[in-house]
Amino acid sequence: MIKTLIFDFGNVFLNLDLEKAMQDILNQFEIEAFSDDMIAFNCLYEQGLVTTDEFLGFYQDNFPKLSKQDIIHSWNAVLKDFPKHRLAFIQKLASEKKYKLILLSNTNELHINWVKDNIPFYETFKRCFCGFYLSHEIGLRKPHKAVFEFVLNTNQLMASESLFIDDTTEHTIMASQLGMHTWNINPKQEDITNLITAKNHLF
Image 1 (cartoon, rainbow, N blue to C red):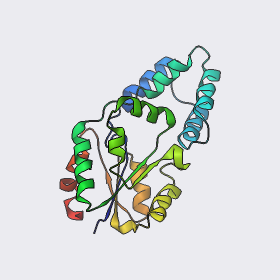
Image 2: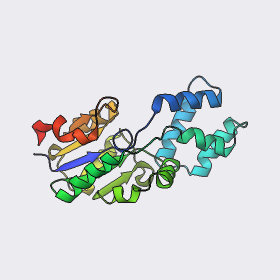
Image 3: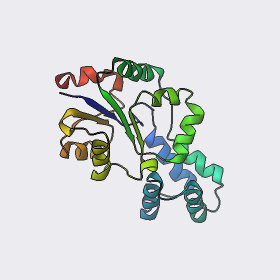
């Protein structure tokens, strides 16, 4: 029996455009792909192990033609909109008090600052959850085993009674290996508001 719902944020509630944003960054930076160093630094930033100033400085050192604002604009281009029907969905779940609701997101300070500035109901959304874990605030990121254990242990959850929803396959694979139920949601074809229908056999 499912007692806890653990949600990702991007491409579950907040729409992202990963493909277009990546192409825009590659064009802006005049590169064909992210280097290993760039990928590693991005991961450090998502874990809060480097500051936003250090993050921007790293990219300015590597791409001196770009201003800080150029980099911020490119970095945030992936972020789109938050449909209001998804807010209504999570508010209804919260009001029913049938499930413990937790959010677990790989993100970073620049992205969250954009959300705070552009999604007027962000704080309302946040209050729907009894646990709200952002990777750069807790120093852990998916798909590492430790981040899932952190959420389970902190909230005294049983993995077998938890359903984890995420659009990234490697994240749901790790959660499944720990005994959690999972929904690897496809944001192009599925919507979180159809959760009960999609996973009816679990409820």
